[in-house]
Length: 296
Ligand SMILES: [Fe+2]
Image (cartoon, rainbow, N blue to C red; front, side, top):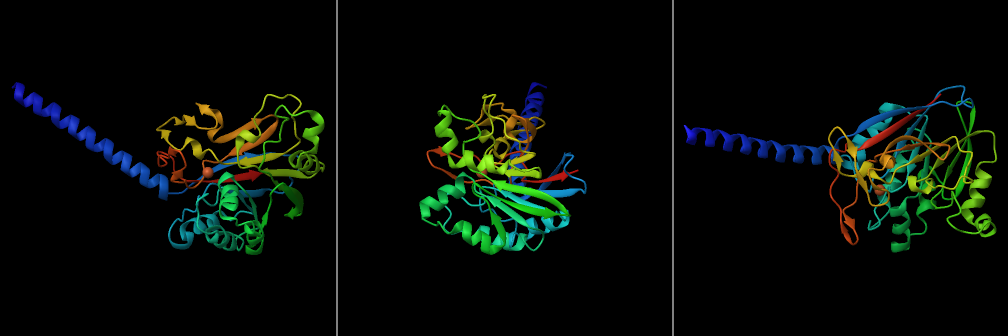
């Protein structure tokens, strides 16, 4: 009798162990290869005709099938009016920029593409001395925005789309005069100086976070990535840790109002493997995410 109960307990424990291993393997696989589309709405009196934005971030040179065929099919299916790439298309250790120029070239056949750099793209450029990257992205068909903006017309409505990779949304302890001389401050001051809808691509949500009550920029929508949704997520809960934002930060993904700026943070589409001094775990319970933002 005792022996039979012992066997039953052993069997249950073994079954739980195998189920746990299977769950981890399936989740890691899906977190690298599946694609989910998350939809957010953004209402503005400046928008009369609906505009659909599609946000791609943090691909980290990951291809969904040969030539990114599955990602491109998914993007085409969404039929966006505008495509946004908010940084980290490459890895800092990428050997060339072919991944991003090929992707931009194909995406730009679907809709106009606007690109800004992430920390990996920036480090890739300095590491490999590939300072022509942004020009090549422009030649591939996107507007490459680095402390820059373009005024565009979408469905008869004027939009100002900018890109900024810098910690300049507040003074960061700098004195007022020096702050006003920074490239980022001058960019933001020029960028906000219009009545048109202002959309900013800013790779890192922590660019926007601060406790300076004077740091208020008139921006209608910011889109970010960088955090990968916390990379490893707890089922039914979500991300719980970021090296930049600490434990249980709400800014790992989702829609937020940050210092008065409506902000959407994507979990991104990929990840990197070489983290420098630390081990990078794979994405877990974290399906690669395309973000669709419906401007209304
Ligand atoms: Fe990233």
